[in-house]
Image 1 (cartoon, rainbow, N blue to C red):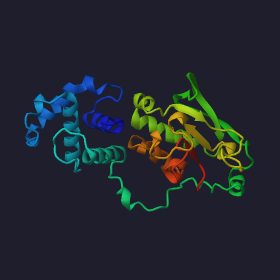
Image 2 (cartoon, one colour; image 1 turned 30 degrees about the vertical axis):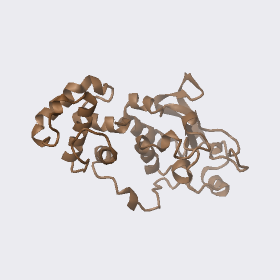
Image 3 (cartoon, rainbow, N blue to C red; image 1 turned 45 degrees about the vertical axis):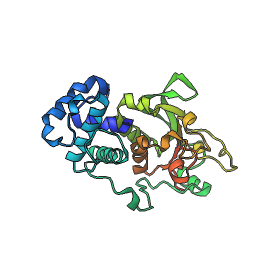
Image 4 (cartoon, one colour; image 1 turned 30 degrees about the horizontal axis):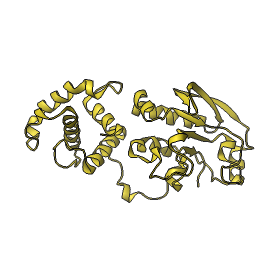
Length: 266
């Protein structure tokens, strides 16, 4: 199971996010025993290894939520993986996520972030490097290129400060700090930086303090979804938190620079 699936199972069984799933195996077994009448397809499940029982338990939780994880056989596959993603959406939003193939192309923009054009950016945010404020992170970050250095706050434009905090608070609430670290969502690659775009000549959105980079080593500038860590399904709700606030992922929009998120439309 991937990290998101483990979190979904913990949520379903009311297991602390900070607990190791292996240490909670008795909870998994107890739940399966309670619902053994629903496990006709899973003959002799009691003799299965702990990992397979955990997958079976997740499949059962998905089925009980009205989802379609496939056979209740304890094997992790594409159908179970997709059902687990849907279960995570139900747990977070109390409703089914919209079918991803049917999503319309116009993203949310509740904060009315401007287009990523210098004229529009100046009109909305003012001059580069001005109106900067300190914003505290809701969980400690590690500096991506020196992980022994803790980062507790950063600078950003005053118009995006509340939105940044809201996003990261939601991330912490959903994933829990242990998973945040496992997924390297605490590796801070930088925010405000008055400079030109890498590989370009116009000013970067970092120049206004309206862009952030995370875990640059595993999401390098020219990497596409076949290599970037943030393209994996484990990170779908990381991106959803940003996108619900109108932020734009260059990775999800253009399939490069997956480390980068900005408060400016493309």
